Every structure is written in C-alpha cells, then in structure tokens.
Length: 450
Image (cartoon, rainbow, N blue to C red; front, side, top):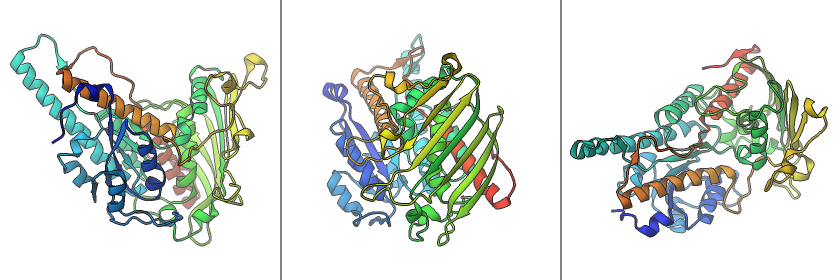
C-alpha cells in the first residue's frame, strides 16, 4: 500500500502522472518532458492497448511497453480500466496525459473525469460521517486528490463528444485542470495578446482573419499515415483542418478569452467552406472558410499543406501563420514563420495612438519580442501547456498531502486556486471544423451543431 505522506513529502510535493497512449509523440516528447521534471514529477504508469506501439512518423522503432516500463521505472497497463482498477496506482494519480488516437479521446477522458467524481464522492461520504460523529458547528469539506488531464488536440472528433467532455469537466468535475495540448496558446506572447483583448484596448471585436500554411504534403498525402488521413466513424472528415488548423482556431479562442463556462466572443453559428484534397489519400490539404458568429463578427480562415519543403529538413521549413483581429478602436496582428522568431512580432494599433504600430511584448519583462507559435521542442521540461498541467497536479498533490499529514479539512469560505480549463476552446474548435467538413461536402453553409 502507498505510505502516508511525511513532512518532507508535503514540503516537496511529487505529482504522479500516467501517460495514456505510448506512440510517437509520447515517446518523443511527453515521456522525456516528464522525466526532465524529476524529482517533482513521477511517471506513475504508462498505458497502451498494444504491447509494441508503432508509428509511420518515427525515425527509429518505438520502444515496447515492457521497455518503456523499465526505462521509466513504472508499471504498464493495456487499458485505462486496468490502470484505474489497480488500488496501488489508480487512486494515487494526480494527473494523466491522453495521447491516444483522436477517436478514443472521449472514452479515455470520460473515464478519467468519472474517476475524479468518484474520488470526490468518497470524500463527501467521509465528510458526512465526520459531521455525524463530531457534530461540527460549521460545515467542512474533506479534501480529495484532484485528477487533472492534459489531452492532445483535437479534444475529440465529434461535436457531441466534445460537448459532453466540456460539460463533465466544467460543470460536473471542475476541481481538476482540463488542458488541451495547444502549445501555442500557452506561449507568453499569447497571454500578452489575451490581456490586450480583455482590457478592451482595441474595443469591440468586429473582424477576424487567419491563415496557416505548412510544408506538410508528405504527411497528408501518404496513405501510411492513417491517423492523419483516414476518417473514423465519428468524423465528418480528416486532414489539414483537424491536423493543423485546430492550432490556430484554439489560439484565437484562447486570446478572445473563451473560458470553461461562458460563451465569450465570436460564438460560431454557421460555416461555409471549400476544400481541395490530396490525390493519394483524399485528406483535405487546402481550405477556405467563412464563419458566421452570433455577435456579428466576420471571421475568415484559410490554410494549405502545399507549402514546399519540410519542417524536419535541414534547414527546416516553417509554417507561415497569420492572425489579425480588428476592433472598433484598433487592431491586433500576429504573424510569422514558426521556425524563425525574427520574422514577426505581436503588433498593436489603436485609434488612441493614431494607428501607429506598437509592440507590446517589447514592454513585457521576460517575454521575447518575436514570433512564437507551436512549441514542439523535444528537449527540456516541456511547453507551457505541460507546465500548466504539472503546476495543477503539484498544487493538488501538495494540498492533499498536507491535509493527510495535519488531518485538516477545508472550511466553507476558503478560496480555491484558479483551475485551468480549456474545454470550451476545444469545443469551439471541434464545432467549427466539423461544420467546415460538412459544408465542403454539401456545397452549402452548415449550421454549427450545439
């Protein structure tokens, strides 16, 4: 059985993390990032349905589950059910990374959220028992070990599944962080942009224009890359929209301030989209869309995989990204080559300063004034999304350890720390991409599924 925490444990919290899905991305990024965060992070378990994961994108054979288990000194399981059912491991997890196939995100995410709800209900049962015995004069809550989630993008490939995950994480189990691995959304430059929008410096948002072009025909026109080009039963389509444009959509809705429980700005209602497709796979590789919004914002989005070259070549060819947001009192623009930070910077123009260019990141301590979008660096301790996830896990682990050590409980009126929840951003992304695929097939504007 797991030993009770000591004073040292409480002073030096350790986040116990499970990695669910042990393919190319987990082996090349998630697991090394977690290992680099020791001793504050422990890889508690790895999960994959196949004992020998394979990937068409890996430059060398992937390690088997047994080899990964030995490398990271942790047990392995073949299903999320087996993991959570293990009394030595399941109840002791502080967080889980979901890096399975897109179509399985819903099943895995729901199992984790239900585990969090189960823990809370167990704590509530203890709480009622304590109150019955001691007849406390003021109500108290027994702390439980929160379970946070870092989920790969897209959140799901089904609007109904995305909506259910949003409801479960934002309403039914808001205690745990629910973070989608849109790394661009966690860049410091993105947070500067978000504060500008939130402080109304450009006024009421009226128009958004965005584009993302990448050197990715090698990925989307190769039939071997099944996860990137084939549709599952829940998908309206698959290709560049889900594989790449999900990043720029998530960035936009993050900057606009989409939280977990409010609609926010640019609530989409209808989409018209045209697409072209790869000759060998049928995956979408070019698209142009117009998105109608309930608040009257005009929104255009386009992108293609036809940029020549490869991001893995020497020298690498980067993606060309542009986002322009226009309001009644100004505009905010961000564009560049994501392999060359010197090619762009966050630019602000306002009527208050006669439309002159300002560069707000240059005024921020600790923020590089350049173009930084996706963070795919396999070295180091991970991107901002990983750091936010681990911060949530460590905070929960520390609070839970202190409560066990000191036998303390949280009284009504005590404030909880802010919990990051990206689920509405994930839902908006899936809603728009789903409507884009339906519109491309019908040749007509398609209503957003709510």
